[in-house]
Image (cartoon, rainbow, N blue to C red; front, side, top):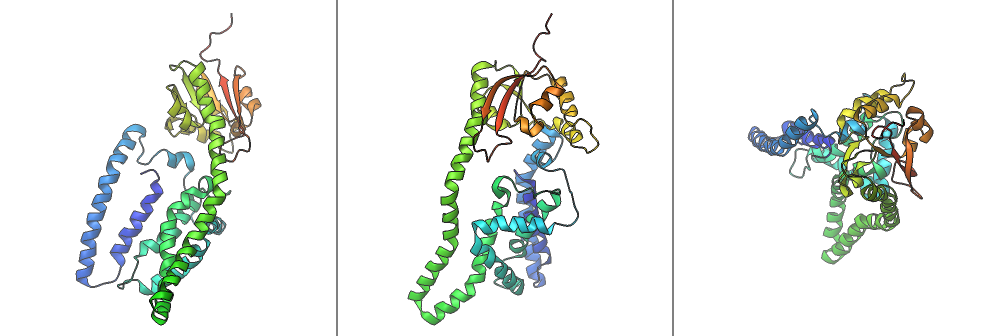
Length: 344
């Protein structure tokens, strides 16, 4: 529901059900089960789609438009696929390496009693290819720290264990029950050790993530709550913590909550736009927020913002030491001239 690309998994399961080999009776059974499955998927998706259509005139969440600019290429980039595989390998090196063997074994077992089904094998490659198609010339769209790819780990671990299954069974048959337990324990360590190492190494990074958010968005939310009337309209670049901690009317500069801003942002990104911030400020002058809360680095700096609107006044600054999370190293609260009386 949160990420439309997850529908690719549903499509893969449906295709796999439709084309898998088997007797006529088995195919009829699969079709019947598949139709029931699609009906269940529809029951989950349709309410969300209706809400999305009524609130923003689009079937998918606004994050699809905010995070991407649509299809950028017709063929996935090998460089993107390599970078995404590297993200997965860093967290689960052994399972990612073994998953290739599991996929090869699946191809041989496809349609038989021990088949995993096509979706398990195709899902990792399909999702990475999808992200590559939506990514421009820079790095692939995979979220902070590659988090958009983390949904692939269950399939990768299943494929890796599938590759180990026959060797472990063969060793067990030769060595007996006691050695089998040792082999199983070793396989468990093989799966868990990299994850535990990543968790240990990532604990400090996570703490820094939290500190970055507290130093910027949370601090700005408290400042607004204490000093700005709740009835004031505030335009915010990063709406999460401020929307949670304050009662202010908010205008989302990223477009997730206010998708009507997206055309202005898109016009500003066009190569032939001489003043990239002009469409955004046309939109803001029309809505007249009393304050802007943003990371100036994302907009070319304070100088660029004041060039578009000289009446902006800095009311608060929040430094983000050792920033690895936010859109800039300083969050600024700017008072606008649009709700203040003009000087005599």
